[in-house]
Image 1 (cartoon, rainbow, N blue to C red):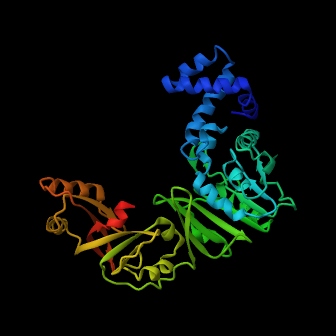
Image 2: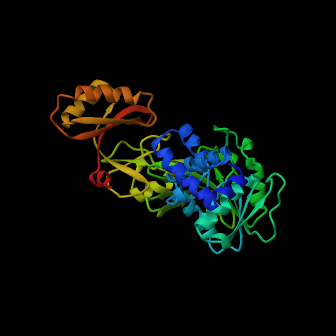
Image 3: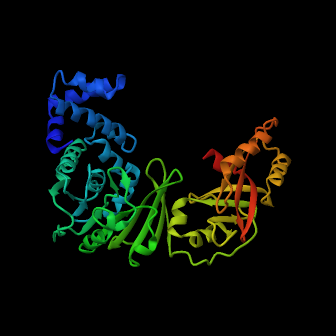
Length: 401
């Protein structure tokens, strides 16, 4: 879709065509829908309506009002989940003016506009048209203005006191792995960020931390045990060195911050409980910060598991009760499963070369004759460098949560 398409889709005729396209696509394929639509509108307009319906379907998986917004599928795929966008936007509260660089369909810009006025910048007129249309849908027109510009040559205006930038990391569907191949390149995004008093630069969650400035706060955000975002915060928006944030279904956040790990946590044998860390904690390198809150120790210097003899509830790790431990041997694992009356088993690993899917299938076949409904977990890992299996049970509070 281009900017002309967006303008037409906002007219009564465009809205009617979109409504009809929605109904047609629910009962037939895209080609038939296009043929039916072209009886009343031009072929270009029909394609725009179908593209909007496809985009809204994708947007609805990320945004509560996605089915009412203006976007195509690519723009919707690139926008942030609403929980992540709102959490990150809160850092900009009470600022005078924020520039969102590379605004796309406006997902982040509109989240920020709830807290501060926004200048949305993009070189693509279609993306700017989407942002303007979506600001109207959310009644945020007065909080947002747009500007067409190339970020490689654009300068941060004096009245902008903070910058948000989410560089494009895909090209025709292919992920760009090198930060300098992003658009804009990471070095340019950082330079633009440093031109303001504060900035947030969204990163690929798997980025090498050594590539980032040492004076930045690096935050990793997760929900549903999945890593959803990484951000480098600069200047007045930086609050420390590393941050791990876990979001709940409603966008509520729990945060842990500290210095990167220095291997200060002691090593020990498996205790009564195993703590499987949330990925945000592992990526942020905050194992040493979390461990004392759980009275926990590490099993191995290179593995992000903690163990303890006390049961502590924490949003930053899943807790398993350790029933038995043995050196890795499939026969011995099966014996322990029988001893603990397992009816089925899940196998997980960290630091183990074993194919967990195949092992899980073999163990469950061996348990098939059991009448027990007890579900156990076999954790394959290393304990002081030794390949070890832990037979565990999910803690009752963890299962019910």
